Length: 332
Image 1 (tube, rainbow, N blue to C red):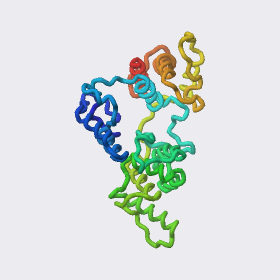
Image 2 (image 1 turned 90 degrees about the vertical axis):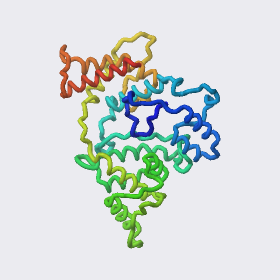
Image 3 (image 1 turned 45 degrees about the vertical axis):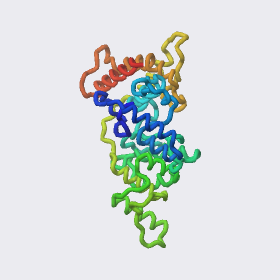
Image 4 (image 1 turned 135 degrees about the horizontal axis):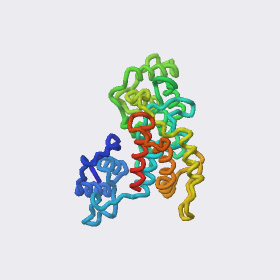
């Protein structure tokens, strides 16, 4: 309902700069989407205007910029609260930024989850290959410099081994890298030629087909690696110790030992572990209004009866994280 669009503005919370969308333009786009003859044409309309057809547009007074309400279950509990606990506070056992085989993560990226209804047939991924997408996402976030880092060749080999053509094409599509790119770094072009010559020595001379549509797996991997080189090669951010084993153990202790009324629903006692499964909206509500406030206040808000310091020490930053968390939890 506002003019913010695209991943570059996904974290823009300065609402004073937000502006409402043109309702008539949205209405025209919705009717154009309904009248479109092909799914490709509909996808282009959706990508440009962010609007699909809804029967609500038959109402002459329908104005989504003024009449939509926040869905507390999906937007707040399964959206903001989930994101804050999992990705800001990192309250889960797998949160330390290390891959399963010991390589460090360099950065986070707002990856786009795969939904078949939102993808044109050109970039559709077979059901059995959808699981590869998240693995490609993880690989593209691994560090390429410093300790526990992966070499560029090692990253290429892993993408080649784990990714399928369809899954790699989809990831490249979400990053705006396909159908083609007019420039690829010399380092990636040389690596492409080296690998292709090793596999097809009879060709004698190989060049990366820059400017041509990427249809082969190796070409798409080259595009992804070129994109990766323009991201952080190694993590430089200071990590606040919000997800230590002691923190997770204390949260579970609070969940297990807090006496609650019978009408308050239970939550997984192994919260944060893989075996806990997906947390439902009602469980997030109970967690963020009862168990997490008790656990985090006693951990980060009390220093032997004294308020934590207001500085840039770990204790001071944990206290600031607590204050921000409580502000969010109160909004639920």
